[in-house]
Amino acid sequence: MKAIVKSKAEPGLWMEDVPEPKIGINDVLLKMKRTGICGTDLHIYNWDAWAQATIKVPTILGHELVGEIIEVGSNVNDFYVGDIVSVEGHLVCGRCRNCLAGRRYKCAHTLGFGVNTDGGFAEYMAVPMTNIWKHEPGIDLDVAAIFDPFGNAVHTALAFEVFGEDVLITGAGPIGIMAAAVAKHAGARHVVITDVNPKRLELAEKLGVTLAVDVTKRSIADIQKELGMKEGFDVGMEMSGNPTAFRDMVANMTHGGNIAFLGIPSEEFSINWKTVIFNMLTIKGIYGREMYETWYQMSVLLESGLDIEPVITHRFPATDFKLGFEAMREGNSGKVVLDWSQI
Ligand code: NAD
Ligand code: ZN
Image 1 (spheres, rainbow, N blue to C red):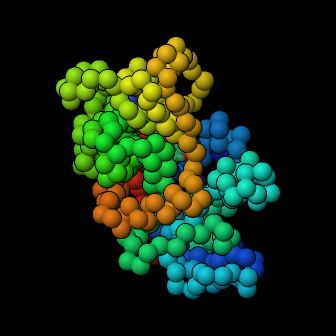
Image 2 (cartoon, rainbow, N blue to C red; image 1 turned 60 degrees about the vertical axis):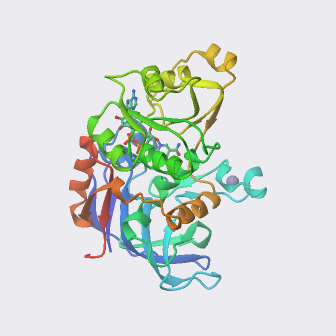
């Protein structure tokens, strides 16, 4: 089968012929339909310091995907040939304290498809039945392909109550934009999203935020005044990984405000902890998606009319994957989806 493989310890990715995977008794075999490109895949393509320290070659990339089940193992219940499914990208150990207590998404020993083990940028993929999410019939396949990052957005956006609240999101990448759409859909009053890239702010506006703010031009304090806010934002969602963005967020929260922190900073950085303490802020780290409560929430948000499709800005046949990575590298894209149906 064809697969996009990190086969050499140098910058680049290569589409190669590799053996088809065999399933075990607890696995399903997927025929790939669509895959999304994640920022993580770009790090691996570029072969940066993180990728060099993390990835063993050869590894098939990819963890944002949707496929059709074409075979099930003898021990598999409730999944059938023909089901359209996505994959939870974290494999959990099943034996640590959190796994045993049913808090699988807090597993102490997770492994990631397409990072620590072969992933889904391939014609076929074998997946344990415990990592499968079955979609509702008629789901848009491009949207189904991005359930992994959509899940990051939902996990963050619903970490704290947003109904009637004023929400500040720093970073209008695909995940920040989807989180803004979720917060609006969930009844937030004002949803303000910030970035330093006008193209990304334009895209955020298309998904219906209250204000998309270029922080190189306007301050968040100024925005509060414009919106008639008196005491600061109730909920913050950090989605840029940028220290300045987070410092600004901390300075613009209401007393007792809640911050969900998803963005991954490249280095340690300092903040004014006195503000956190005297203003009694709560800061919660967010990783991955809850298994499988976030997946349930994603499905019902779409069924109740949330539309995240406009965040997909580029679509390419899987054979043209390099064009997809180029679009990502320019930094102006939303989600980039690869189509495997023509292979
Ligand atoms: P992205 O890199 O596409 O988006 C980040 C955005 O932040 C960019 O548009 C950038 O211009 C903007 N930005 C930079 N400086 C800023 C500033 N000072 N103020 C406001 N915005 C600023 O990333 P993404 O794919 O949307 O993911 C969002 C973040 O979440 C990234 O940091 C990513 O590494 C992280 N992430 C975390 C998890 C997790 O499980 N915790 C999962 C996926 C991604
Ligand atoms: Zn575990």
